[in-house]
Image (tube, rainbow, N blue to C red; front, side, top):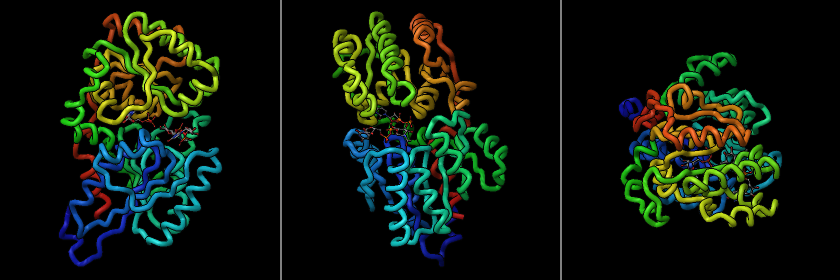
Length: 373
Ligand code: UD1
Ligand code: UDP
């Protein structure tokens, strides 16, 4: 950070927006980097309240050493239209009252698009962290959020080279695109000591490499009874060979109740469905899993960093580097395929990977260097 450039200027007032679980680990390193330079930056942390349960929000603030949010919009859950609109109405007031120099949004959730849209209409520049990722699947709400946010952002910070290519193909000026690496991985490195000292494996009576870790929350996988039940059937089959640990997202838990699937799950103690876990315990489980099965975006990247085998239960991914360089394999949602690939990994046929460039602990510094100029 070139501090001398800002000597006689006021610190830039920068709003950092987070709202959903995967946002907190993406903004935390940026927050920590900005507060090192009080003459350069005055960051304000706005929490939209898209996620609100302690285990989806508050526990992450504590783990990631984020402060209490300066402003909470408390929007809660709603349909896409209603949730996006509520965030916009509340965030417009915040921008009016605080007069920021820049709004920073991360990822691809509804909070990302809503706040970016408010800012650009109020002529406030927008920085998008994790820009340019594309699944090419417009039935995913995240894909719409990504495309639209990128179109209206002034700074586009990317995690992998394909993202920059996508943005240029969509006509975005290459001067706005900055390949800086992955802030989610920056958090992983920053908190290594914390998750290394987690005792979750001991508490759960697990050994390193002796279990499969699962997360599922995509509407396509959990919102349709038949699809979800078929995936659970596969997990029960895998559970015959090795314990399966499944910290379930609130959306997923809701579907388990609605579809009366609790009995099916509890009939077998080798499939252990839990509440969502705190960051350090989850990362400890992720790092030492024999195999991770997921439909999460971030978990595809974290497993690539840890070089843990990951099978993604989706037809596409917006994070192709996890496949070309990492340990990720797209297996789709066909139950026979999920089972076949899982057994391959469990029998030792694992894909080796490498860690992508700039997935290190300097990502926030690179971002702040650009924003500070
Ligand atoms: C959202 C993001 C998704 C991201 C995921 C991360 C969008 C469109 N989707 O999906 O990209 O991968 O977060 O976890 O922004 N709920 C609770 N407590 C909470 C939060 C949610 O019970 O704290 C329940 C509610 O029933 C809610 C449902 O989960 O209706 C879905 O929440 P929502 O934020 O709409 O979408 P996610 O599936 O979490
Ligand atoms: N995560 C966690 N506890 C859990 C599940 C996930 O701490 O029980 C972390 C995970 O390590 C990653 C992030 O949450 O850092 C991913 O969030 P999620 O899968 O909800 O969102 P996505 O990445 O799919 O948008």
